Length: 254
Image (tube, rainbow, N blue to C red; front, top):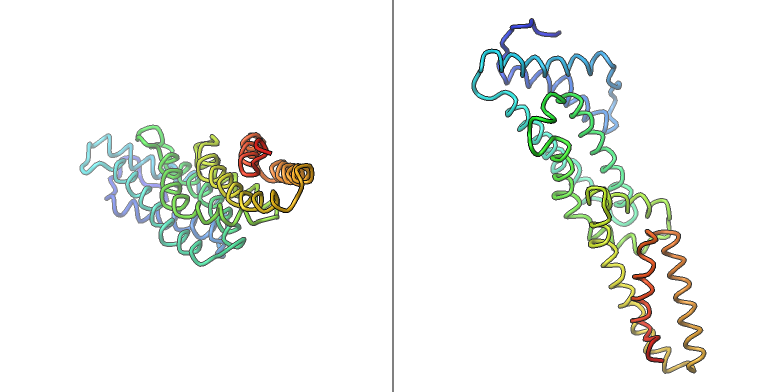
């Protein structure tokens, strides 16, 4: 029930209501627990309730700062959910199951942050960083930072195109929409692994094959790896992969 226009609500009482009606329900929904979705009326009620806390705070200049406390609580909700649920779940998974879990958890995390923004939109432009930025940076620092190395190793061994594509989206989105994280955390490692894989093979093939047969073998490898880029990775990776392969296969020295 909405409070009266000038009713002063103690912060802990207000937060308890918001957590019960909004935050806890939202977490149950994204965790696929039995919980009906939010109705438009429920979202508007929470939005109005948060607005009331902030407006009354400004009317009566209460202490402590309600908006700051709400902001801190939201940050804590995001961080607690990541540490207590997301990371624990990911650490229990391995291989492709871990990748699928990572993709699912990233999707759920974006839903969590989006809904929190709806509940607390009065504060979105008031604080720096915004709740949206807090949501992204906490996932990036706590989840992506821990899992990206393992994810890269698994992706390099995968042949499931759909899974690879969705996982690489996690790299890009954690780079604030740029390819910086993809290039640094995935592409760089992949190119190093490619050189490490083909260098010993090149040494062996140069001893076993004639120069013409060796070049044919190198051409097969180049075509195969270029095909892998087309199917699985971003096309900006192709020239870098070709250069790495030429180095590994010592093509310029044959």
